[in-house]
Image 1 (cartoon, helix red, strand yellow):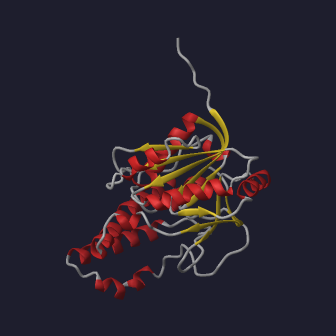
Image 2: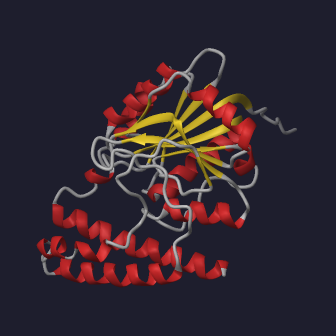
Image 3: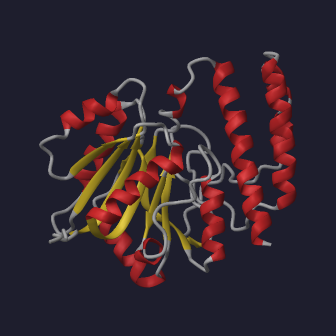
Length: 296
């Protein structure tokens, strides 16, 4: 005889991807708890993405008596999409939730109206994915919203060529030349320094903080996992376009993003960090190109 476990009903499930930086993860969890009001319920799923400093075990112990937090430890580094999808899969099996929030561990909630704003916006727009105003410590100080148009095939081919050139330079430790080549990236129009304070629909949203509604989670578990790191925003935006789903940027909803804290722990030297960036951006842009070509 099989026993079917009933899913736990909650309003929100937060999936936090953890890598090395324990303080950031704890502060992220604390910001969720501090900004939730008693009229809403939530659960937090932390995914330790095989942190080399073994900090996942520290988190398991730290939250062992916290009924609102579950820590999963991945046996391998699954990358951004894969790690988040591990948490999404667990959440979809364990909880009956209304909204799933996928957030970086270096983000902080800032408003006790967080839940009210999301429920209100969903009742009006029936969004698939919602993005907040993302406040950052450095320029452009606001990461959302992104463009309203998809990347083109021509753009991807051009960017792949640039990454190959930069990888070649990196092999010979000529990274100083990169500063002289910044004009190669002048066509990158993912955003500007202009602060945006008006609500927008059907725009690309920054990957540090996504709120998925039942319209999305009833059809997909997580995001496109063909990349290890980078281009997740474009791939999600493409998926939404292909499925006639709506994205919304809501500036009333605010979060703080410390920016790339976990990524910067992967490689300590500037040279190795840049090689990591070039290599993974090259691979991810190839994935995006393939997806765009398949969409035509």
